[in-house]
Amino acid sequence: DIQMTQSPSSLSASVGDRVTITCRASQSISSYLNWYQQKPGKAPKVLIYAASSLQSGVPSRFSGSGSGTDFTLTISSLQPEDFATYYCQQSYSTPFTFGLGTKLEIK
Amino acid sequence: QVQLVESGGGLVKPGGSLRLSCAASGFTFSDYYMTWIRQAPGKGLEWVSYTSRSGSTLYYADSVKGRFTISRDNAKNSLYLQMNSLRAEDTAVYYCARVLSSRCFDYWGQGTLVTVSS
Image (spheres, rainbow over the protein chains, first blue to last red):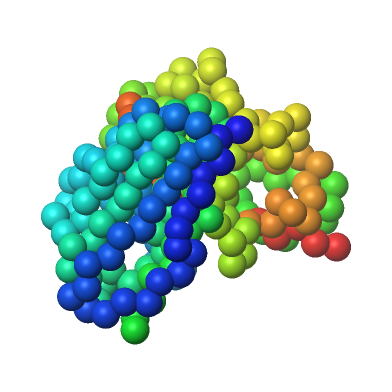
């Protein structure tokens, strides 16, 4: 199985900050990497698919990059509604594994 | 608009069975692969199972293989998860989701809670 390692596991930041979350795969997954945002009590929502494609309706302050084993999710200027937990997920091969999540909290 | 609505969760004893349903609307259900994902209380996301458009190709996580069965009824726009031999570690919110060609999960239901406890 492909292991997904996300870092950091938690992060405190302020509105307006630029934030980067990283995800590393245990083997190459090409660009089969997706990012999700989850708020408490809600289902996850896809932000970025195929490593760098912005899902329709997602604000342009979210961006993704990387290929192979190393990936990043960047939020260019944090907004109050961005405080949530973020997960990466590989869709290269089953089982489709998720990272353990990054909880983004208000500083 | 796309809607996915899960049902069938509840409290069940260890060793028991439960069948989850996911009713889809707002899109051509038979055009999409579908999947189940779960989330134990306070934990991260775990992919559970995945079915092709026709239901002829099925995949499972090792943790549920041999105990859970995914199926679909395209005439009823519905996805199912039959869960047998349930264990305490199967306690989770179960989500159904639509799968895109990139194999990302673009629409999710609201989830249904399954609690396995004596």
